[in-house]
Length: 224
Image: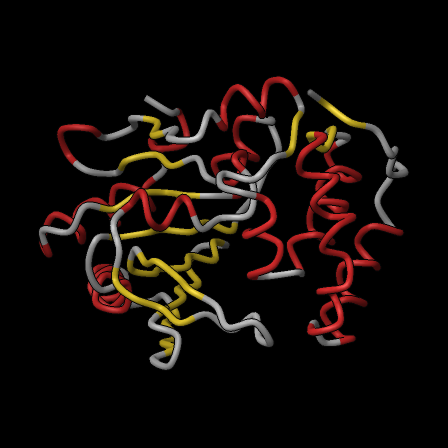
């Protein structure tokens, strides 16, 4: 079992998920950072059901927490005891050519993890009773994490065309974590570079600032 699951916050989410009979998972950056021995207080939960309903149930169990619901996006946030908890239902997404705003449908855990930007961000840990603490690694993200490689779970041309901001995120993660971008993924960034024009200047500036202020510089090299 992952040691971080001993923290009370995960037990509370587990109780709420069991009450609703919704399978729920810790996903993304929190799992990645834990495995890299990096600390974080931002935790994302994906549930097979309503993320808003799960957050509301968690809030009932810790009424001193602050709950924010974003109905338009089907997500909710809880701030409690120094944590920022994000809740969302598992989803699959499709995109139109001129927008990075997805068309969202309910989906499976596989659907949700496959839509993520990189395999190292597609790791999940179960908070469900019988499988509590079990790592779900559908795209060999643990191997890539240990090897220091960034690659997309699916075809990178689709991943970057759907949401071009992911190209800048690739450079940012490679810089911050000193990871290598897999050759196919980096070539796709070069091919899809023109798609960045649909991203707002504010989002581009935000990513560039993180790249520039990282303690390491980005090295342009490939991994096989």
